Image 1 (spheres, helix red, strand yellow):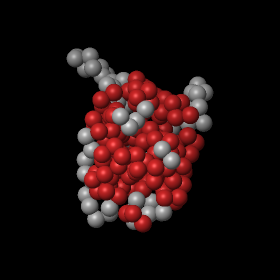
Image 2 (spheres, rainbow, N blue to C red):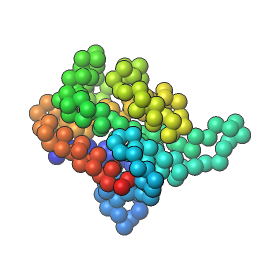
Image 3 (cartoon, rainbow, N blue to C red):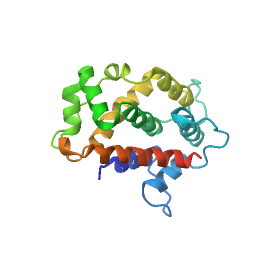
Image 4 (tube, helix red, strand yellow):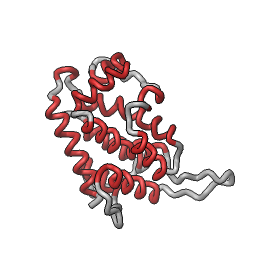
Length: 198
């Protein structure tokens, strides 16, 4: 088993501000709280539609009154972190699963960081926002930014925070981790997210 569900659960709890409805247990319940009530009128399929629904619902839950400065996106940093999870997981899938994604990251000059994320005995090295910009589809990132009403830089910042945690959670046994199992866990979380949006 990988720890992917745990990390998504932690991010989802942060997005909820630590509140969790007691009658719902586990990741499904928490994701249900974060993503609950979404999907009305979201007929688009694929990652774009899913992200639109996630972000639309999160933005709706997090509405705050505009400040005098006039810059209220209605979105907090924790919500943005959970909103980029489907983007990161989708990117891993598009690159051939965990093994392909790790190879792509190493090919982008992030070998040292990737090793720190995979090796359970090391702490996660940070990755600079600029280092991941070329890896992710700019249209996907732009879509998240528009939905969240934040600059694209903030979305890349959220990805650079979440990516090491996700890779780390997918490789609990380090290099000995079963990649098929990790890819199955990615699919399960993606199914869960899309399940709440149907």
